[in-house]
Amino acid sequence: MKKLFVAVVVLFGTINLVYAQGARVGVKLGTNLNKISGQSFKDGFDLSYHVGGFLELDINRKWGIQPEVLWSQTSTKRTNFNAIYPTEINPFNNNEKIKLDYLSIPVLLRYSVGGILTLNVGPQFGILLNQDKTLLQNGETAFKSGDFSMVAGGQLNFKFLRIYGRYNIGLQNINDIDNKDKWTNQQIQLGLGLRF
Image (cartoon, rainbow, N blue to C red):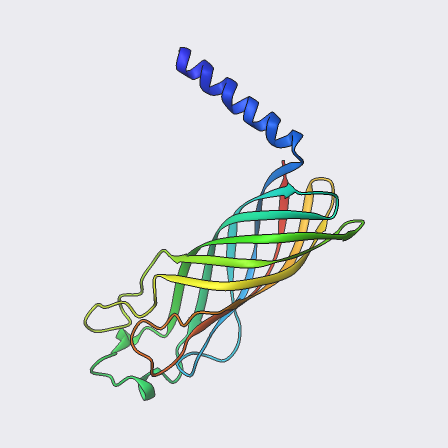
């Protein structure tokens, strides 16, 4: 009972300290329009989703930092894959649609333009949570376990509501088979956030 009391006191003390420093916590969800660039996949954007949480830390009235943790899905379709990779290496098991789930961690610099508009820019680190084992006959992974990208976008900040849009451009080749075809993620995110 004593440990629980101490934990509750520490938790409330930390929350009060965070709020005193100009920090806000919230959750967000939205849609992804994404594609994997490369000759092997469909040229065009597919719809998927993301959900997660964010922390807004103010440095001063204009500048701040916004780290986030998101579960983000990427989906696409293969098109020219068998022309690049022979069927004895890649039978695909008739799987045309590819879905990748990432734990995305953007760390964004925030700049308040004035009023309700904030601009965001920064790096994003992605950890692949699932490996599509049907892609290769021998069960090896087709996609690298991590991704690195840059994020730029804007956000409308109301009292408790956040409305945002951003563009993510992958800077790393996520092809884990070979170097015949370079694959990079691209993503447009639109969504809503709720600040606590």
